[in-house]
Image (tube, rainbow over all chains, first blue to last red; front, side):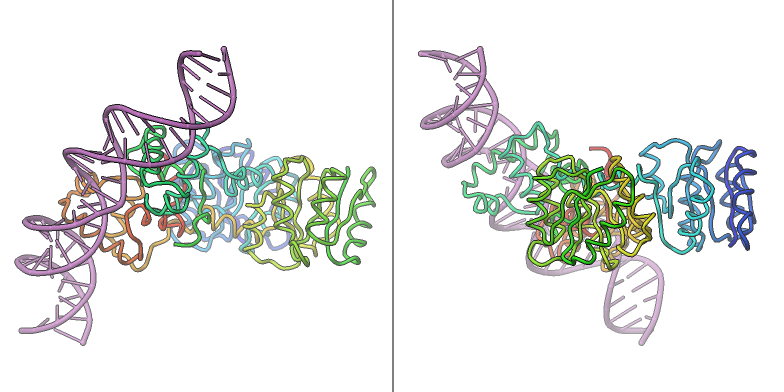
Length: 215
Length: 215
DNA sequence: TCGCGCCTCCCCCTCACGGGTGACGCGGCT
DNA sequence: AGCCGCGTCACCCGTGAGGGGGAGGCGCGA
């Protein structure tokens, strides 16, 4: 197992190195103190796993992760962080990280985490998993507080790509009524047309990918 | 810690019960062999955690999970499954499950999992986490193979709610060109209007919530 | 060399959409 | 009683959007 360690604090690097090299056959083949150096080192050493700190001077760990993953290397990135900032988790996932753990986890768990990401699987620490589930699956379905019940019905229909006429027949009302609701939705959401309304619906979590499985 | 066990196999229930009751202060306060009974038992016993099997005769575990979560109880649902079917994971997350683990995990991990979900956090086993990350963060950004480069550019603009004119100025071409690209996109995606195109873009993962952070 | 896909641009035509305005019945709140 | 939000429906009007054509340039492979 070939491992790279990226952290701006030399002491943290030493600590991690000591933990990881206690495993038979594990080798720390590269170290870096900032994102740019990390990208270069990974390109050079082609490790199996990179332990990547988030907060670093210069290029941060998330940007470095993005570059490493987009370079198409087989190297897996395990992001380490001191604080449980949800936004880091989402950014890290989008950057292509294979895992996200807290620095303070016990050595055995850290070793297990490295083993898991090296095998192609992924893991997040429990609080992040909760955040991800909430964001992914959503708190059920958000309820656009400013919209009335009926308006939410219409917005759901909009988000399924229905025309005003289709919505009207589906909701058993006249097209005029639908238009009136749509107009109200547009002004309340502060958008220009139905397309933007649908985008807001997706971005806000009011509807989620998977809701319109058909089409 | 008050726990409910839901599984159609009495032997599995016995096994789980034995494992969980080996912990001090942990009590299995309800059991059920199908989804409907599970919902009723949880309503009656109000346990802290439910271990929920997916495959069951009658109402399955995912539907039962949905009902339990939507009922607004504080009970956390930990879904157990024999096979690593990704689709189950997504359904479980959307149903509101707090965790998703394989039945075959060692007892210590199962106990740890129960402890985690009871504390309000969540966990998934590593293969599921990988699947979730891939689906959530996506493989970067999918590339609608049937669309040409330029058409993908236009679709991205559509997915940000831009009008034809805005797209034209943004891409430094004429409105006519944009209209022609849009027409091509609509026929290729087999949809009727730009709104449906945007929906397809979201549903297919071509764009993801967060891509249009503005608006 | 020819064809073909892609990108670009143009014209005409139709219509669903969206803005503006007004109206009615209903229920709840004061 | 009065008011107001909600849901329902209606009409007019302007315009953006989409369908159906056609056309030229460019690069690439047959």
